[in-house]
Length: 191
Image (cartoon, rainbow, N blue to C red):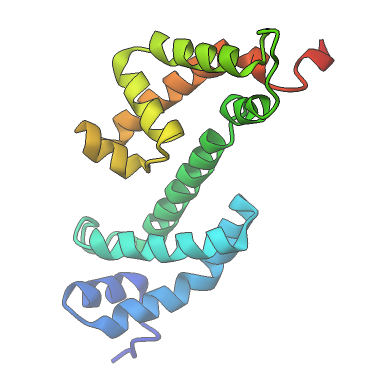
């Protein structure tokens, strides 16, 4: 009889389904370092990679009954990890877009002449840009960018799925970026 350390991934997952906590721990220990190296390369951030390794196994545990018995575990583990990493990269990319941060810098140096860049003008332009969005995109962008809610929180607030929230944010932020592009510092220098 094979020991738990020698057991295949599929045997370990089956044992975990049957309630053996040692099987899941062995599976975790088996993949922890290789997944961490893989995710570190993908993200360029060791701490974020560590978080995603843990989240990968939380998802594996939560969905342990979704993989058909005997199906290979390794590709499933890496698919979960890759999807989490892609989502992290996407989320980070969305949170780093420039115009709203540029607005904060512009607001710090008001222009009394009322030219583009003055406090009143920037506030008016931001309000007009948000108002021009379709209602659901405006709602998602406001909750995310101005209230800093997470995607899950926005989904709960709006009653939409997280995927729908992501879509609304993508299109809404793209439109805001286009409408407010001239507020980003340094843009005129390259022209």
